[in-house]
Length: 532
Image (cartoon, rainbow, N blue to C red):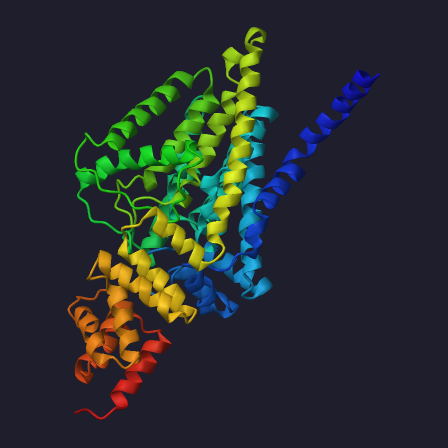
C-alpha cells in the first residue's frame, strides 16, 4: 500500500516539478540564495556610478546616457554602455537611492539568466541536463561578485540579451536575434565575440548550415564599431589600482596563467574570494601556472574535437567558454589581470558542457546506468557545498569595510587597498582607523599617492604642518595624469602655501573634468584670494 502511494506521488509530483522548474523553482532558488544581498549597501564603484551620478537621476540626461561614457561623472573610461546606464536610471526612478531596489534588479537578472540557460539546455539536450547546467550557473560562488556588485550589472545584462539572442538564433527568428544582440553590445563590450559563438554554433550544432542570422550578427557588430568610434570611444583603458604594463610576449604567457587560475577558482569551492585579483606577471614558460594553462587549453581543444560529432553540446559549451575567455585573457592589455565577474559569460558555456556530461552516449546504456547516478549524486553534493560557500562569500559585499578587508586578505601586499580602506574609515569620521591604514599603505609603498595625500591632509587639518609637509611634498613630485590627481597636487600646493602653483593645477584639473563643481568651487576660492 505504501509503495503504491509513493509510486502515485512520484507520477504526479515529478511531472509538476519538470513543468514548473524553469518558471517557478529556478528563479525562486536564485532569489532565496541571494536574499541576504537585498540588505547590502552600495560599495566601491557603486557610489560614483549611482549615489554620486547626477545623470541617472533625471530623464533629461537620456541623450548623455546614450552617447557618453558610463563613468560620465569622472575620467573617460571608454565604457560605452547605454543599456547599463539606463538600467540604473530606471532603478533610481523606482527606488531612489535605496540600495535594496538596485540589488533586487541584479538578483532578478541573475534568476532570469538561470531560467534562460535552463531553456537553452532543454532545447539542446533534455530536462535533467538543463537542470544540472542551470543549477551550477545559479549557485556557483564565482557568480557572487557579478550579482552583488551594482557596478558589474553590465555582465548580467549582456548575459540576458546574449542568452535571449542565442535562443532566438536556434529558433530561426532573425529580427529578435538582431535586436537582442544589439542590446547586448550596448550592455558590455565583451559581447563583441558573440558572432564567433554564433559561427561555431552553426558549424557544431547546425552542421554548417548558415543563413541571414550569422550575416546579421557580423553586420550589427560592424555598425556598432562604426558608431562607437564616431562617438569617440576607443578600446584603451585608464590606469587603475591593479593596472599593469606588459609587452605582448608577457601577456601571451599571462593568458595561460589566468586560464589556469580561473579554472582553479571554478573547481575549488574553497578558493579564497578575490573581490580584486592581483597576478604576478609570468616571465618564463616554466611558470607552473603557465604550464597548467597550456595543458588546460590543450585538454579543452582535444575535448571539443572528440565531442564534435557524438556530443556536440559538450563541444559547443567548451568552445563558448574559450570564445568568451578571449576578451578577458589579457592578450589585449586590461586594467587588471583578472576579475571574478568576468567569468559570468564564459560560465554559460562551461555550465552547459557540464550539464551535457550527464547525458553522454556511453552512460546512457543500461549496463552503466550506475555511472550516471553517481555523476548526478556527485553533482548534487557539489551544488550543496557551492550554495553554502556562496551564502558565506556574499557576506563580504555587505558594506565597504567588509569588502575592502576581504580584498586586502586576498592581496595583502597591495598598498592601494589599504589606502582605499583608510578612505572608507575617513568617510565614517573614524580618523584613527583611517590614519592606521594610510600608515600601513605607506609601509608597503612610501610613494602611494592616495595615502600620502590623505595623511598629509589629515595632519595639516590637525594643525601639524611640519609633519604634513613630508607627505605633501611627495605629492607635488608626482606627474599627474587624471583630473583627481591634478586636484590632489593642487590642494597639496595650497596646503604648502604656494598659491600660484595651486591655481595652475586646479585649472588643469578643471580642463580635464569641466563638469566638476568641487574643482570649480576650489579654483574660485583660490583666485579670489590676494596673491603675495
